[in-house]
Length: 426
Image 1 (cartoon, one colour):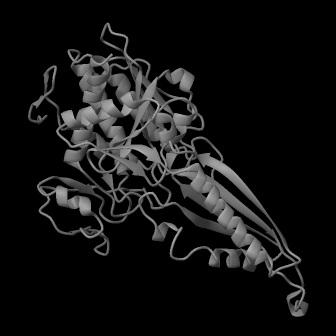
Image 2 (cartoon, rainbow, N blue to C red; image 1 turned 180 degrees about the vertical axis):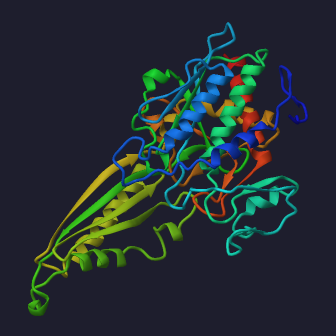
């Protein structure tokens, strides 16, 4: 295989290979979409097809305990090769792809030595990766960019992370002169539908700290996520025959629609917010004349911000219900996940070590926040502090998804350097 230029570290000169691209191209053609309507774990059996492949590849590398469990999780251990006592570090990525866009029959293409400008996808010229929508393309001139043909998503979210962890694992196993502590690998199903760690066995995993490899721009490390709740409003209307309904009927679906209509229009919605601004977001209305259910998600970076938005929602509901005096409602708030920064800030070495690894990979580290959540959000509150490191994926959940070969290679280097740094600083 071709080799990278030598990368000089504090301890050794390392040569990496380009095999991460080969792995990635193998993984993306396997359909692994999750299904939020399914009650099983994993939500789709096809996720196990990739899990079986990954466990087999790890075993072929010499990772003897690599296995796929009944719930679709892949566990593996790279044993320590140092006499130091080093915290056990886990690298984690998810195997499923988003149900928002088809992931069947993915046909990846590589745009070699990207020259700048928009990228028109060949099977559907209406699908264009536009520079205006993807400012990160400005840093990719001369690099190789992997896209789809325009008919499916790519699956870089998060098969880029899978390929990068797998490549780093093989590199460490082939280069025993690189000292590291025990390294755990965890590949999860169903992250895209919010159930990625529902059945994760952290006792079996046995890690002290973890990193999800599931971020966007090269060099980024994310130590903060939204806090998230789900709000369900149940409306009991008043039914009557439509031919004799005047002054009697109070239509539950119309009440739900009125609540949606009174949500803020210029603030507090996904389409009007950015940065650290949170939102209320309706995601579904189900029902009949007599009874309807309105589902929303609530997002903010602070618990206080969540409470404020939930109070705003209830005030809106109460205001609407005044126009329907014989109808009734109920609001249920369910916690989904919390801002992982609350946990990670207690362990500054997790971020410090990651930022140094990014520097050693030749990048400028950038600490940022995620307007969303990852498996790391829930893992952190389950007792496994877990920030998120870049994988290089962009425009995810869409047919214009893309990833840079060179960014994936930098992610591999970052993972390897991170393993070394934990050992050095132990």
